[in-house]
Image (cartoon, rainbow, N blue to C red; front, side, top):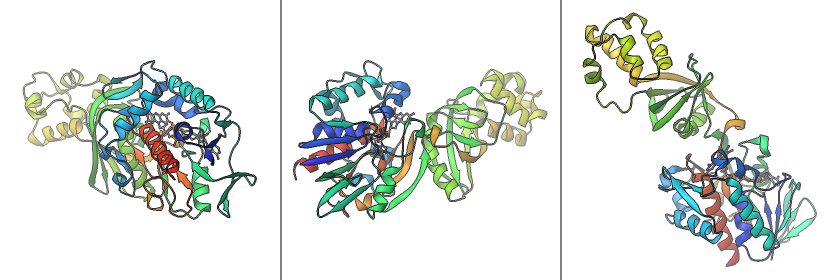
Length: 386
Ligand SMILES: Cc1cc2nc3c(=O)[nH]c(=O)nc-3n(C[C@H](O)[C@H](O)[C@H](O)COP(=O)(O)OP(=O)(O)OC[C@H]3O[C@@H](n4cnc5c(N)ncnc54)[C@H](O)[C@@H]3O)c2cc1C
């Protein structure tokens, strides 16, 4: 059996190692697995200790496609590849701390298996005639796997060609939007500050999601893992022209802020600078200037509420997301309702979609690479058992 794999990223390479038959990978870049090498700051966070499927998002029910054994399935694959790994704060990385360890292992094994890896070979057309797939008008295959990812990080060759192929072959598409991306908000003089926080996103006044973690305050808005994990909701809402804001609690570890402040003796100006980053304290003091030289106990009850709100419910309007150049994953993709649980198209038998090109996006923390690996393994199993 001749099988073409469109895209030499993580999902495409994993599939190539597992499939029986005559395998060709088409990769438009001059080197394979380019995106993998920039993941996890060059360390490749490929899995998470907490693989609860709530960390995956789609217009369809992901539980029909991803099973609870995803963690064991990915770890078994890493064991087979003899990749030593470690877990740091629940995130899995190769023990070498280098994404290139995984890249090199995949390329080595694919070469050993005589996979035909065609670099600098961009696919522009997939057709099916008389039960035969034709790639770029010339090469013929029995089956095709589209593993071409989506548009995040176009600066290293990412493309949305998979959407084009799927549309040309009559598949439905869930709107693609940048996700795991910094947000543009109201601007303050706080570039470079990092703070612990609890952050909630509100769409048309309704709280949609809350995350906790370290926020990075920037010249254009906000960033950090907790922001990435709410960004998909912002992307979707802004695309619909909904009203989007976030509320930030800058002191999440103080359980009763009223009691805490009531026990302080210094002026608000001094108390805040001993409680949070002093530059952030200046921003908050700028919003409540007339209170700065009073102690908490000298404030009226209304003034106390205003101060506590600034610290625990800091409201920022979200005006946009940064673009695909800064987004780690693309929300949306090929509609899962067109795909069976072996990741084969219901519309074009013999055509498979795996990895990010599908309408599945995971939270930050290894979920997207885990899905790329998992979907490749499941699709390969399906093809081999044909
Ligand atoms: C900066 C950054 C950091 C990230 N960090 C993490 C992380 O730590 N953990 C995690 O889980 N996820 C992370 N991700 C997300 C993760 O990298 C992707 O979800 C994952 O790589 C998707 O795998 P894939 O195989 O579907 O697609 P890709 O890895 O994107 O591979 C697709 C391949 O197809 C090729 N291609 C595209 N179009 C064509 C065409 N027409 N013809 C031929 N080839 C084509 C591309 O060049 C590419 O090599 C990160 C992403 C970015 C951008």
